[in-house]
Length: 98
Image 1 (tube, rainbow, N blue to C red):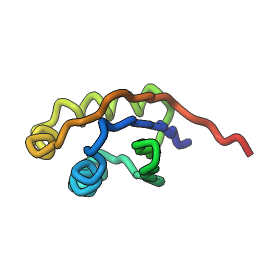
Image 2 (tube, rainbow, N blue to C red; image 1 turned 180 degrees about the vertical axis):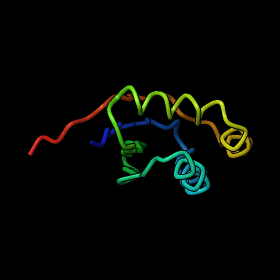
Image 3 (spheres, rainbow, N blue to C red; image 1 turned 90 degrees about the horizontal axis):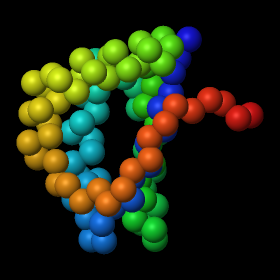
Image 4 (cartoon, rainbow, N blue to C red; image 1 turned 60 degrees about the vertical axis):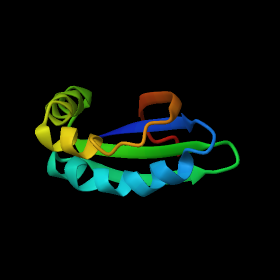
């Protein structure tokens, strides 16, 4: 079983380039904690960034792994260079529609 979380961010005007330059630095740390990024898409016209991250197991297992990841010194180090600029975000679990 795999659980997928869909994440959509609306960035503040002028912040997309910095965010896109930073985002790849996050991936090795996510992977270290068992997460897989399924896709990441930037939509420049509306300043949105949408990505999906998966983890083996059910939602409870995903949330437990996420809690460990978020408390880790590895994540803290990556976020030392986070460019900020996220105006809003939507995050939720997703299931296949087709």
